[in-house]
Image (cartoon, rainbow, N blue to C red; front, side, top):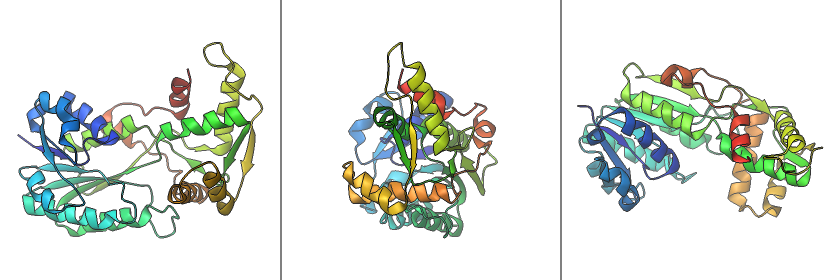
Length: 296
């Protein structure tokens, strides 16, 4: 019986992947690791084993990964510091006898990509290739649900501000990412493969404006939801950072969001892949459906 482990299992992606796995395998095959084991009491009650693992304390990792055959390594949120954490996790997994690691990365983690997360992910992918373990990389595109507040703000203000230029992004739902991860963990034949996990189409800021105008003109549930005539405002990176700071975002977050806009402008998020359907047999959810469902 193959034992499947998940890091960060109490986080949103970890929980979503766990839900798919609980429907696909015997719960006793699952080892869920987290800094907060009490947060997974529901999964433990269903038969999954919950273990404490703290990436800030590498000593906890070897014990957490003991007996695991396949491990989903979900990238941590310690941007700029997580590469060392990931390397330590890969080393601990190898020492514990893990045979195969599935890792969640980002599209096109190449030096030219200006997204601030690229160096962490590129370094982790390299560490996997050098580990001697079997590996699979899932390069998840930007989450579709994160565009809901963008549409809401556009409806409220009549403006959609972007530094992404005419670039497009293949937004994907967290649920589709989780379904793909569960498939990679439970199926054979994915060793040494890199998959772009994307939605069904790549959308520009102009496409988001069109969607917002449609929602504004039709209303939601018979009620007006905001402006119908929405202006697309294109700004440079400096103005993007300044505007996000003015809106109350911390500087680090403003810089991160702006860097993804720059990556969009450079075409690094535009690839549309059939991987979700190929891995899971399900059609990936369109951004428009996510937004309409959120604003109904």
